Image: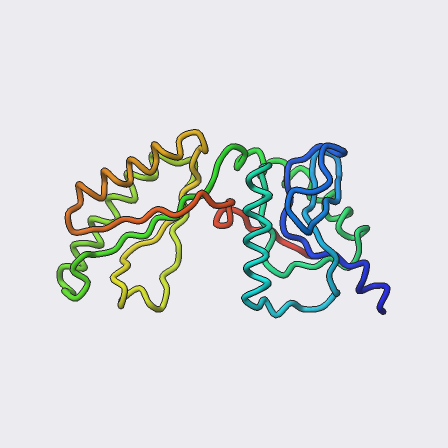
Length: 211
């Protein structure tokens, strides 16, 4: 049992790295290579992860460091493979799907945009602001390769947040995208827009695991 636990691997993500070209993309991790793919891993007990704050912080740090070196597909937090052999077979089985996904996100980063109503306490005005926010999001979609509308949070009403979205932006056009958001925020007097990133493409990857 102890031997199995020691040989298990926590998967942070899959990157586009030719075999032999790198040993690691992030501190504290190694790579399991399969052809033009590399799984970003570290040894881990083969147990259900509790995903405490420290683990989530490390998950984000590893992926952000890896993303600074290569295109990367984030794995769901807490993903653990029983052995390197199991992981390699998974990479082999999904090789073409993973390489296709990496080709989509290559050279891109995620920008998350929060839109807030300045007058957050006026319910009638919020309806108007929601329409203006939708208009702004349509404009921003034209500046990105893909867009995902993000779910609302419990604190959104209190904070005045009326829309959230994530945009897959060409890294070479990152500043241009931020400039468009700024100009749109200036045009929409009743709205404030905040851009965060560049992030790995968390919102654009949905890995599936199974037999």
